[in-house]
Length: 394
Ligand code: PLP
Image 1: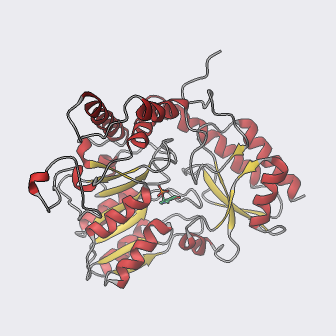
Image 2: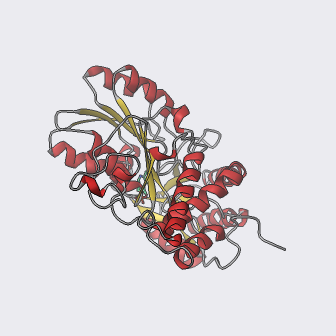
């Protein structure tokens, strides 16, 4: 019998029950692995840097991957999507490239360090940062954001699309309306949403959207995307070779996407991400339904365990398939350790690079254990996780 597409069948032996999809997806679909290997073996030239056959093939590979990623995110012109090293670089580029001293921003209290740390640097340089607090499930109330935006002139509203701590989905389309009605931009960290949700950036009406390639998009690590709406130009983070435009000598070419892609690109990573995007275009709806079903089963299985607090929206509320929990009996790091050593279950404890989010839900001092379901998770994985926690906390 052949494995269904993307099932992780060939060459990806599962060595554990992997429930850390919030950190990175694993195992990668075999089509993604094959695309990375093919890019390195048969198409290894430098894309956009040479007119010989293999360099043109490499450029075509990057072009086709960009088109697949743009299609997946509902972006009509693929040139509005720039390949970067990951969501961290994409967040840095959208914040540092669009904000200047004297600007004021309104930001959610659930942000990851990929937003809060660059914002801290910008605050030191004279950007005013006002934080709006989410509720105990990690969900933002758009009317709180509206009040904050109306209070003072605002250059940008900054918000994640979904939380890497509680799985909460933020009201992005409402925030876009609020931002635009008040002359502000909406800048979104989509690291936890892309791949887990059906994302249409034109319908959401965002101005910039940062994406991680290696999480829900199922691509390799070391690649991500930044979408910038047509006509919105950010100052680039890096200047350097783009393969063309050298007659302009010192000044960075201003065209898209090359303005944001100085230096030799991560062609194998981009090839893998393109293969992943094509798989998601074909099977994404079915895979998302499966992961939601399994995630609900996990949440419903964990919530009744005595002494356990599970953070995140109710199981009938929309969310991405990530939750965190704490126990009143065993601390978070010990739970993650015991799950790994006794049951072979891989989960992550601590603050998940999101101290703001943990402060919001009240777990800054204790940390929490995070479970993330994703493509490749099985019903047996979920049942084993529920049984393991019930036994550990009995
Ligand atoms: N933003 C959020 C909400 C995340 O969860 C992460 C990764 O954990 C990032 C940004 C950073 O993504 P990357 O690993 O692609 O740099």
